[in-house]
Length: 327
Image (cartoon, rainbow, N blue to C red; front, side, top):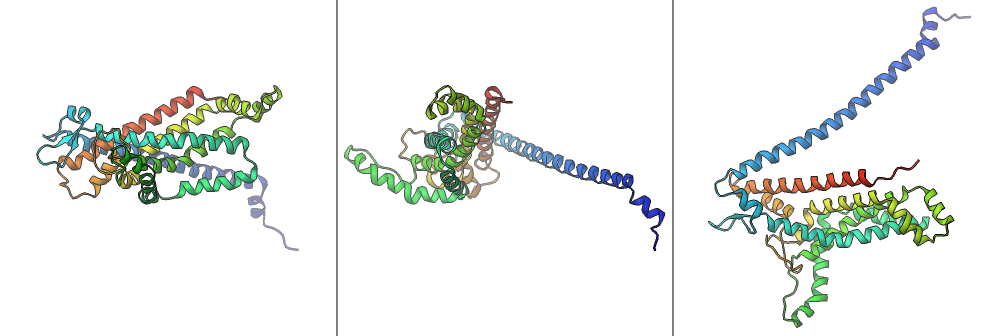
């Protein structure tokens, strides 16, 4: 009968096996921790790089002789390509961006919240299993498709429905590119974001709160409105702000459907240029890469970055302020 060498017995002893297992676990933990730190550091590096780049190019823009800080932040005309009378007032771009965002949120926020309430509190498992993939499909459609959808369907539908009334009243109809169709398309784009995040916030409310409200004689509507919605308020508001930031930063839809004329207007039937639309236009335009027109895109991008950063900070503050903790 063969005998096992003493050295092999010692290597396979429980203490040595435990020692190797501990060493392997430490190596794995170190690799995982290093990977996570590397990913976090890369995110910080990218953010700082964007800030440095925007700051550098924005300062270059303001160093141009035809640009003044007062005209940029207080001016109401954006005509960088208009002969010798160039103006770089950013307010037409800001107003165009916010106009499209207001139209989009007027559609996305109420419909998204109602959809989330229905999926969370009223829908059966079969209906939820059908509607959730439909919303996910909407979220997965490329944004350029939404822009084309606005051009070939939403705008013709608006013209068919409202242009005869406008002509009877002596007014003009919808332009081929207009604020309303772009806002509707962006609202459809943001609808899955609002509904999905709001549903997650509603479903995170403990079942015990619902049961307690039912035990006090509350109806389904009473429980939803007076218990569930207030308890999920921080998550709902955060989803709203995230949708607003998404609408403000949308590019392809507004570049195709909103137009490329920067102007102050309250008429949703006419075209208006947004900040992202201008950046896309400048990026693909045949302009001097050393002139103020080129660097103006960076200045607008810096303002857009500050706007979205402000929305993110406000959302973080709201989550901390209205967050409900349950045991």
